Image 1: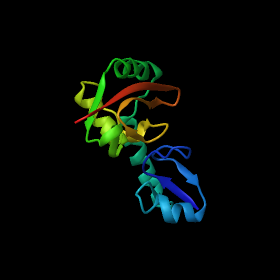
Image 2 (image 1 turned 90 degrees about the horizontal axis):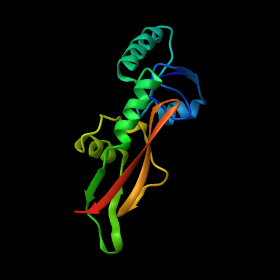
Image 3 (image 1 turned 135 degrees about the vertical axis):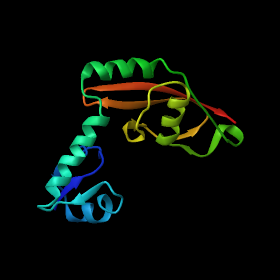
Image 4 (image 1 turned 120 degrees about the horizontal axis):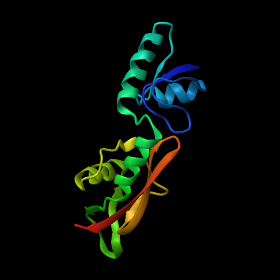
Length: 148
């Protein structure tokens, strides 16, 4: 099934790309969550709008990505959250929480979909996250989770 991506999907493509995926993946996951729309002949107009919007929001050059990377790596990110005994959190720290903490710490605005975690953060202490700024540039962000 041909679909038009409306958001970036890891391993599949960026917003505005027309990709071919299995019917069930498109019908049960991508379309209901708003990550994609079905491809139609009239949908080609939507592709251009999506691509123009993507160019406005994305980091265009590697030099810009390296500047943002330097800013991100210089920011001390601290999240205070509720925790139980032995340092276990009630729930986990999400990508949205990390993006908000980066902005609160004075760092650049980061889209939560660009933040990648190796494993869910469910304990207090120091953790690391990766931020994909450009296909060739990724920044490492150290996140310190403290008890509230």
